Length: 319
Image (cartoon, rainbow, N blue to C red; front, side, top):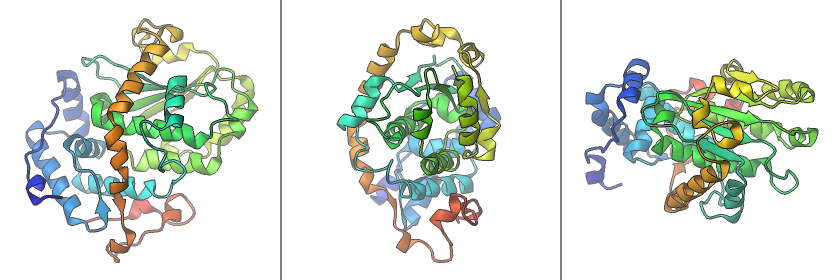
């Protein structure tokens, strides 16, 4: 990185008044210190020989907000973000590209729907995941997670609702069968749930399962065991669709979910256009990550222990 760029004044996107109020009250955000905090984090990244991280301003600000403006926690989360990516190669691989045919197929099926919220709102952003919208015989669960991770990354850069208020996942289980549950590899579910909880900067505010068949209950309880404790307490399960309105006003939802905010196809078109705008961003992913041989040898790190075998990466201290 060019030293001149390191010291360049950060350019921060202003928040709406509603979101700024939440950021100040809940995240310890100090508008007068934003630029200095981002600059401090940028300088720290430059000082770490093992870490090659993005340093664009909104990216760094997302980690500061996700750490409630604790610089030390933000440093730790950024390090985890890149380190843990390397442990899930089935998701974070060469196919994680905006114009990859498989990625575009999944987007066009509407498996993942990001629901737009008006700027004056101060509620968590919402993603609907249509669990049966894809053929389990053609697509691997890792393919679905890959696409979701791409939109999650775009969300933390572009969507202030996600970085300030967090995010809510609506899991639509209509028509789910045993084959869909058997399609979920427990190890990947466990790894990615830890990555989302420990490394992504957005706060998960909850997961709401709707249209859940009675026969799914046992499978759900089995799957729930793989989630971190904090996430278990934020899970809601319902056999109807009506519970969705407790979390999202109907006027923000697409017509297919009883709303008036366009159609699923409208959402798909917007998401595809947004993803293609990030073509160069994802092409450059190989330039970022960690080089463990350059990590300070006084900091012990064990990939496997962070995923629950022994020990805990949560105890890692990063200066």
